[in-house]
Length: 181
Image (cartoon, rainbow, N blue to C red; front, side, top):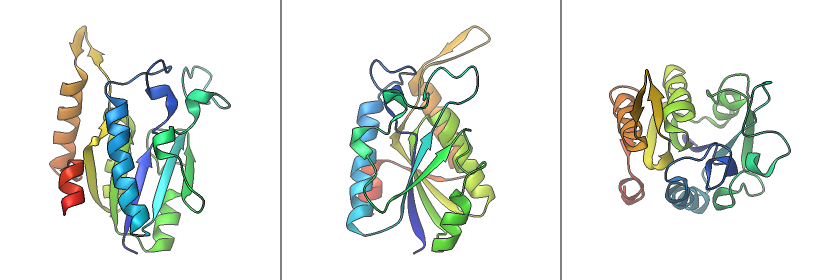
């Protein structure tokens, strides 16, 4: 099998009333669910990445909390791999690379949250490790950011990070384009 779906950090704390609420996580998760259904239907490898916030100053994804749980829209099923991580890069100090290599995977379809952090770090690492990557842009979500007193809207953050990834690291598509291909 040369293709796998990576679902990064679609966890409750990113949704309404969560500890790190994003902009548009529900529609993004529904698009992840659509892509996930296609992978399940085709019996292709699926990896759920589950982030836990264990640093002393962590404020979300705290172990044992409902916020750290994977969202109901994309809950893993029996036989689907789950990788636990503690850093934005899903490959760092996890068995993700070994798992994918063991399956002979060469192409990754990447979805999840946050676009500007874990999607970016994971996609760049994957490409550097030799994988061909497709990021499903509308199956990702991010949040408003601030830098040097300037407020950057989530839509602009999303566009900027997807544009940067598309210049070398990944093919960026929307859910409809990907499912139609």
